[in-house]
Image 1: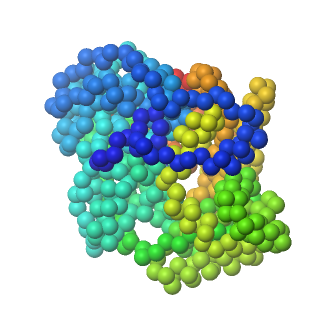
Image 2: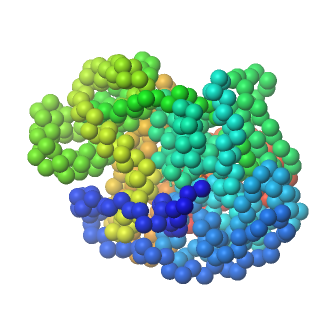
Length: 543
Ligand SMILES: Cc1cc2nc3c(=O)[nH]c(=O)nc-3n(C[C@H](O)[C@H](O)[C@H](O)COP(=O)(O)OP(=O)(O)OC[C@H]3O[C@@H](n4cnc5c(N)ncnc54)[C@H](O)[C@@H]3O)c2cc1C
């Protein structure tokens, strides 16, 4: 647990900010038009409906308004807008913080008997409406898992470590560092998100190319459900029927509460080096990324920005570097890599000689695709800010610019068509309102057969929160329809939550949805656990 006070209605901790680079604001305003719909930074007093009666639990129930508000919603754009404008209309009636499995069991038993909805709350960083309290007739309790945060056991010989599921990224890595180990799971939300949250949303970290996504890192877990407990012991592999860990991974609190997990850990690499290369075009970048991965170069990280993201990320950075920036730009232009160029970051971890060899092998492939190396500077800058970028969302809102992200994955052969389809959906949707949308994209989790595509969008934020949320919902629906129609996945790593749930059946089919529904009913017969995520097809984008 951190001593720093979490912000409500914004990213991170009180008092921390990421100043908005003036060049970025100017660049956005040039494309969007003047942005004067500033959304107040200080949330007004929020009048939550009074808490309803809850059954007796074997631990204290938090009823204090600030605590209830802090557990009312996650971190998606509409959540931030509602927090900031004091328009959060529903919140849990109480917050409980269990310290062990017995307490979790007792809480779930009491909720099931009284028909109270129970929402597991890890770090609350969901960007899919996963922790949102939906207004309804039955009371809601938030199960904040922050006290299930201990290191249980380290088996150094096998490379396994067991943690309470409520542990956050920094505490988990600090505990492993004492043994010279790492999990290697670094989502951008790492400072606030939790091991249990990562597992049930099937999270991917920025170094997933080297370490794998969380699915690959979980060896065993305990799930506590209203109808019983699932103990899935750590085994290196098993042919004993379907892998139930994969039923829990992605279950988003519908099947039970992950209270503990055993994860696969590795020796901490002595160095992590990230270098930058400019590829002459997005297509050249995609081919180069595919070749690097299919050749099996053991990188830990590969990230390819499209032309627009490259302009924002690199040109603005270079512009701030005065004469050096000008010289680098000229040098790149002379090599045909500036106009339309796409920045690729490559990361390698290990001892210095392995890192040198790995980066050398990758760079040789990139050169054959016209890549021009930029050295370590872009990588250093990215590494030093990688967990601070989310603060920019708040700074942009302060300036009247709304920003959101969405992501998907598709095979290499269809990736470009997906990017075009999503980009067109986003940029054309607000045309009738005469509003522009700026869209950036990157590839950040490549596989042998395809990759994830990640989009960042910017649009002018109307001062009226209902109008701003409606604008966001229109964009979200259009992008999600485009993703599903293109045969790409609803989500590579943010999960389904309540916002993507209406589209899930289109991806997994009626039999798939029925199977998941049956599993949920078996473990949670009265349907009290997070009932509005994953399997509830109601469109809740504007709720
Ligand atoms: C700025 C920002 C950057 C992000 N970057 C990434 C990224 O790089 N990669 C990535 O994968 N995701 C990213 N995310 C999304 C989010 O951080 C992940 O989905 C994360 O895994 C959620 O973890 P959490 O602990 O915050 O879970 P929460 O948000 O608290 O919960 C998420 C869902 O899981 C359920 N849940 C939580 N804990 C448990 C448990 N122990 N047992 C059962 N159910 C539980 C909740 O009820 C909810 O449905 C980002 C989000 C933000 C806001």
